[in-house]
Length: 126
Image (tube, rainbow, N blue to C red; front, side):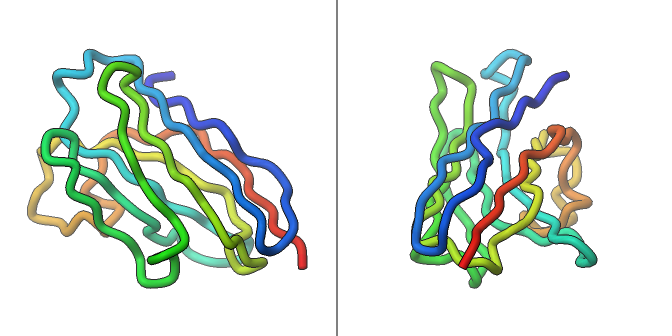
């Protein structure tokens, strides 16, 4: 497993969770890493992404102001801090690595990403 996601769980609406996505490859080869999610019966949805060198972030409108994506170079890990969670945030969250090979696709397009983690379940109850 090259990408390991962790940190999912069950919380009540208004609560917080922090997801982590650790990579096993050399951190100097990182380009960008992002999070997507998929709720039951729905298509995969972009959540957030961060470029490795500049730390430039992009968020889906649905999570702006509530979620924060960061990276830790030494740990080769990306974090997704999720605050003010809503029942609509319930989904399996997947981290994905962008190795800079498919830049024709936008950072919010899943086709840009080369490697995917196994997913971690986030459940938000009302």
